[in-house]
Amino acid sequence: MRKKILLIPLALLLAVSLVAIGCPAPAPAPAPAPAPAPAPAPAPAPAPAPAPAPAPAPAPAPAPTPAPEVSTEVHTFSFTYPATWGDMMALAKIFSPGGPYQRLLYERSNGRIELDIIGDAFPMADVLEAVGTGKIDMGEAGTPYLSATYPLWAWEAIPGILSEDRFTAIYEQLAIYLDPTVRDIYDKTFREAGAVFLFADIQGDNGAIWSTKRVTTVNDLKGLKLRATAKMVSQSLQMAGASPV
Image 1 (tube, rainbow, N blue to C red):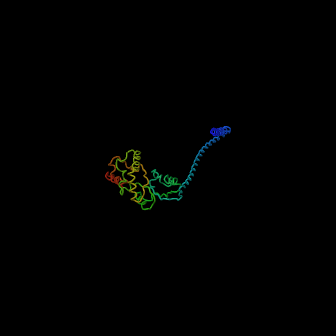
Image 2: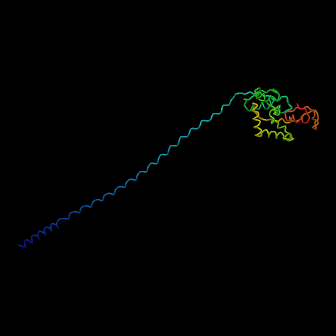
């Protein structure tokens, strides 16, 4: 009996084994499909280039400055000069009616400056006073005639201040008149008289002695009546024995 019991389990074991051998092995579970690789992240789109700044609008061209209005007003000035000099003096021709002074003023002012020329309107020594008080607008006169009031105006009569050569002396006179210090003196003294010093002219031989009597020495001057144009000249002639008038 004991043997049967042992056989049965053995038979069961064999049966189980047979069953185990006879049954097909279970199919292996399929390997899981590999997870798809993650898609690469899309590259970021490049930032758009900034739009160029708009060009500044051109500044408006400045309006052209209007040309100054040209005055058409005509100014007429009364003017006197020593007409008694006559044609013997070039200066008389310059200042006479129709002469260069009147013509050039008219032309260069485009007809806006005219001169009403009056010859010998006043004695030479009175011209400055006439201009300063408004009796006449303009005048030409030798400043030595006024040297009793303004002694410095007779500087041309100082002995030795100018060369003996007449042409050299003319250039020397002009240089002195154009000297800034001398010009300032003339400007100041003319203002005191109520006038304006415009320019100087050179009268050449006006300072020479003209006589019907031959004069070769100082003694020849004794008793000789001479017209003197400056106080210093008058005093010098008196000291030499002449009779200045």
